[in-house]
Length: 197
Figure 1: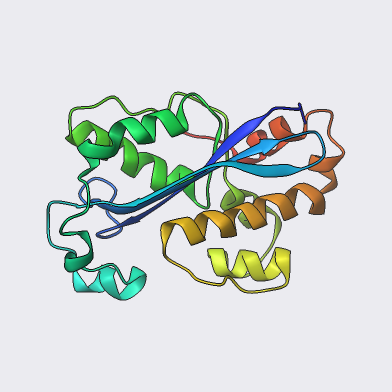
Figure 2: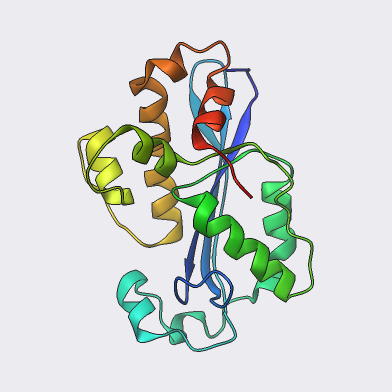
């Protein structure tokens, strides 16, 4: 990989699973930097987000985020510049990011009348890599167990899911010869993710 490569890992917790209707209640982003020897964290951003609607109990049961917790949290419009500055034009990654997080974030930015900062078409989705290559369950916890031989410390909170996605990404890079032996490992992982918009 090219020294100085940076990639943003993104995860959202929301009011539900409908990408056109539901809202963000928490965002987590971690920027990794390849220094020539390995990846290191160069930036972290996480925030609860006031969705400006009640959080259904079914969603709270999954991520544990309540209306009380987000009551005084910033709205998406209050932190859109921080999100934009973190993502910039960097490549993106996250677990099931292509099918869920990216479309939901685009819809949320459109809802507040802002341009979504997702200009990069370079996306690595560890979920897609896992699903194409291995059988069984493909949720994030299963991926961490498969690639890291452990279970996630905590699930369904944005920053913890980012760190789990990073563990899976790093393990996939080393696990599959088609990536770590490739002339351009990063591009090989992007192509294996099969971006479709």
